Amino acid sequence: MAQPVQAPKKRGRSRKRWLILLALILAAATGWYGWSTYGKQSTAETVVTEVPVRGDIENSVTASGLLSPIKDVDVGAQVSGQLKSLKVEIGDSVKEGQLIAEIDSASIETQIEIAEAELANLEAQMIDKSAQVVLGSANLTRQRALVASNGAAQSALDEAVAALATAEANVDALKAQVRKQQATLKDARISLGYTKIHAPMTGTIVNTSAKEGQTLNANQTAPTIVTIGDLSTMTVEAEVSEADVGKLKVGMDAYFTLLGQPGKRYPGTLRQIKPTPSTENNVVLYYALFDVPNPEGTLMMNMTAQVFFVQSSAENVLTVPAAAVQSGEVTVVTATGAHETRKVETGIRNRVRIEITKGLSENDAVVVGSGSGDKAASSSRGNSRRGMPPMF
Image (cartoon, rainbow, N blue to C red; front, side):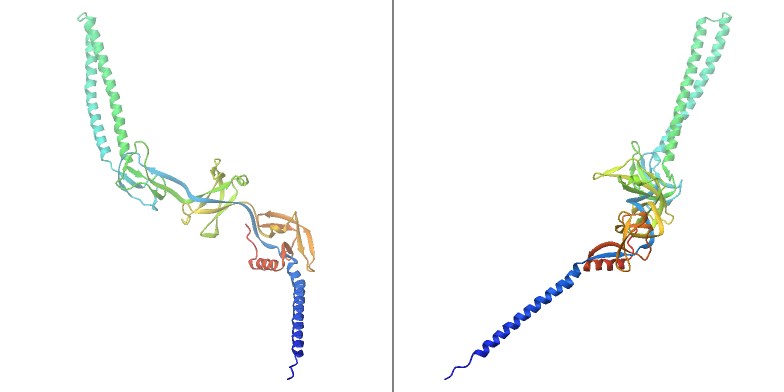
């Protein structure tokens, strides 16, 4: 029997191999073309531009600080005893002279009674001693007359002189005792007045350190009962680094913002720079103080403030990013796409932006950076969305 012919199958397999080889060649050519066309475009350097923005700018020294009352005072006890009543609580408003606490006065009242009785005793003794002086004076006069008429011996006259001197000395000593007792009585009455404690100033009770029924010992130190603060005006105490403190001048404008109110400014004027610094973790910090009114009581003690001491500022001026200005020059992309270097005059500058006083208009495309392909385009789109960067 004749065998089947195999040649057509061989020709089919050869044709298939050529088609696979042709497909591989076409894929390689396509890849090379895509890389040479689009790869080069994506790696080509592209500049990022931004038009100058008109707005406000300021150059300032920043610091952090805490709020405290412009004035506060610890009100303490000047006499020992049990705190009988405390008439105020934290947050209460008080007026100068208002009664805020009382200490049990029973022991002091007893001291006053004893002192008054002792003084009465001394005054009674004074009557007796004064009578002895009168008697001694009369006896001396009589003895002098007798001695003159030889009716008495000289010794009797000498005794009369000595007796009068003794009586007068006793009166002087008793007068000293009376004065001492009067002072003791006065001191006891003053102590009695100290049992009623009055507010020394108008303000707000910001702290209480004692409780009703507590025994206060004022023999060594004056125990604090309450603390009164004047919250109508608050003081900002800002910590400024030694690198920045030389930029501050008393009288310069300042303001602060709060964490809960980032858009609201509280303005003031730098009042004082304390000469003695503090050191924290080898960092030297100086304290700069300024005051702000607090009529509504919205500012509270120990609030954290972000503080700005304004060195210079301007409103409604042309500004560009700080990175755009190099040695007094900027690069501008013209309408034809060419790059043009321009000299500019600058004004106020901070870490982010610089004021341009001459050399640019609001329509100029200023080069602010460079990148490659999609990165630059993304940066440009991001700048467009964000608009003007922060001024400070």
